[in-house]
Image (cartoon, rainbow, N blue to C red; front, side):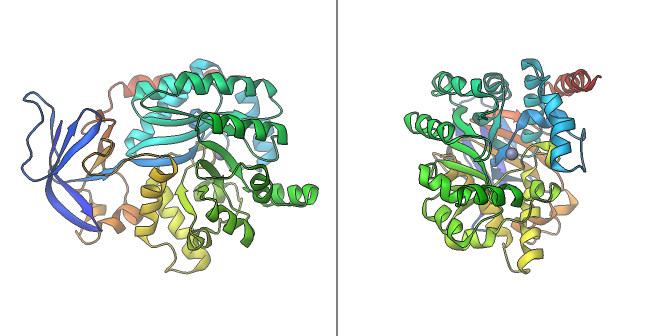
Length: 413
Ligand SMILES: [Zn+2]
């Protein structure tokens, strides 16, 4: 495949008229006047388009896209007890397929080529994700309320460990829903299979206060004592942290997945992202599930991350380049992805139509991507496969119809 005449941001500067040559799953060359690798190869005209490396959504529950707009503006416990849990009890494998395909469709439309998920029915999730063609770091959620889920983890890790797109992981839900035994078993499995460990950490003040009252240590101290924190750990939220928690997360190279929209919508609080970054922590971005967002866009999340920190700490905090790095390089490091617009990198990228008004005038495209982006991703490529071209994703109508059918079945009284 050859992408002709793209614009690319290099060290914050826009370089025009560059070609990107792709062979199989990787970028083989970036430069001027390149040739298609084979005579009949696909050639994509990228004149007037910006090529960006594929973005990563670092924390979500993708099948929950089915519940978009179903229950908003509620307190956490009534929201869970009256709305979310009764629906989740009715979920079948075909609902998961419908929700995951809808979610992947949205990720593709937002230029995201990898997501980190924690939910139920992970084999169905993995199959639907692979079919849609994007990368998934997937973990079945573990709760002590559902002890049978633990037995599914190891077979899932074995089944998917060699898949080119699916990275099976281990997902203990949180310290307040998993016993020490479950957490240690999760750690052991993650270590044995060299898998990522995905957990919610210190999300709400109540959760942290009651944990500290009971155990006389913070959730971060507790996970550290159990040996669950390290460079393969993705810790979602990290809102309520002590200065010593911040140092620990940075020193142990834990990947902090910041989800500012969800934290605001659920009134969980504001994560001390600036202090985490100052301490050297690897901070990435995630949307969380759509019930608390309500979409999968990392562009929205970048803007939200920057604005929340500025509102809280001052306008110079979290400049656009730093936020962009959170959604790209930091996330690639977190999930071991060799993504970038350079020879040898995975062919995961998106093309954005620069003729949209929010990219004009041509001044500072990094700023435009973070602060003014309001659409225009028109081509998304993952692992060398074109998933959307000129705004068209094959099969989109059927995916939307399936999602509607599942939603109606799940919410019928
Ligand atoms: Zn979550």
